[in-house]
Image (cartoon, rainbow, N blue to C red):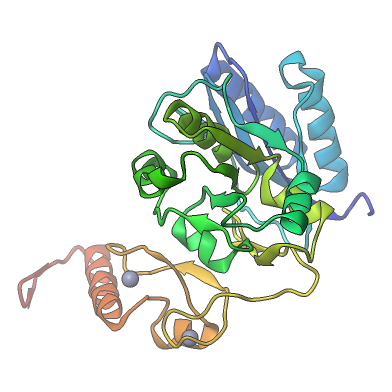
Length: 311
Ligand SMILES: [Zn+2]
Ligand SMILES: [Zn+2]
């Protein structure tokens, strides 16, 4: 890899940050000085980020962060990219670095297991019977890629996880391995599960991205959804597709948000259908999107619609 090659890193660390405001200010300044693009969330509970740049700049960023004692053991998950997946550098203060909505004891999370342990479980045991593999992510993420025989809770966002656990009450005595993209969600999810009667909970260390680095083309199926411009990241060398266009049902893993602002649903749509429905998820949304465009154009001219009249 050359210094000019582009990479994206994913990282988190739960650690007490006493003055998040100050941290945000200094960190943003530093990232901008380096010319990085990405998103870093900071709260009293720690830091969670995705940052992209040339290899040279990312190395500087990593070295600098590790120099701080708080982050000396932080793990960076790295992927090569062709294009920068962000257009801005944002460092923001949040209540939580990953929004869960429930207090959990982060000293009591599920045991971290290395990808090789999970691989060995697949090789020697029957998923769904001897152990349960639980996807802690959202429904649209699960659609484009998942571990073989994984179960999921059909949630739209991570805040729904605690309530949705009711669906798998009957699995409380099973050995369960949870996984998510980079591991951060599993920290909270596994701790919450343990606190709520799940007896044997493990979490995949550093998530899907780390598993894919170690063992591509094994037990991961499809691609991995990521929260930046790329929307999906390749895990396997073959580039397999397990999802279908939600409009015409052809095999496809292109995700996008519906352009109807009142819908804004993340859905899978092929380029052809995106063109036909103008980036909307249904004909109804296309009609509504059309109205929104007209209203916006009129507003620019200082005019408005009321009922069927234009003023
Ligand atoms: Zn289609
Ligand atoms: Zn829609």
